[in-house]
Length: 264
Image (tube, rainbow, N blue to C red):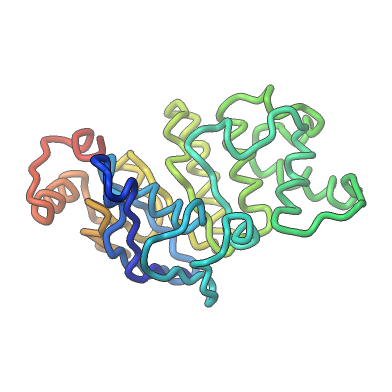
């Protein structure tokens, strides 16, 4: 479903601030893979997601999604193929628009716009049923402006919007990091439910090592713009935080005392 081949990206080339964020990165995802991504700040996690989403062009390499070469496509041209949820609950929605209007925009993402305006009766019924799944009572508040929602409600809505039309790839960029533990668990459970139901191919960056182990069928660890550890299936299920820290020390040559040090 997704292949990154020899992807490189360097920022501020030729200056004192030059930084190689991705260093000949290679990654292959099968359809339906749910991959959690861990690594310290500067490891290249978000840079990888930005490269896939088309936020900026890569310096070298090829990105293939669902059999199509998307390397040269602009960010808006990839919108029909990719759904994304950001760390900040304020991103991904239009705060001054109603819940139903935000959903309508998400449903039309990447499509050509005509003179017709409005939400059909069938769409209203569809959105009502989709919102019910969230279990937050938003189906009865569809005319509420999104800016009035709590962070957790807004992030759940953004997740629904990102998956409304079953994208080829779902990118979750630390999407629970700004939430309290109880709300984060709720959003993660919703993520699991939607990904499993729609068999979505998913990449999820997290700073929580426990969540990285508990969710998804595969885990990758990044360091210095490369993947240094890739584990899946039963082997992944048996992992502990200590296993991951030991593996990081073995491959990177850097010893860490706890998971907070590794992921900071």
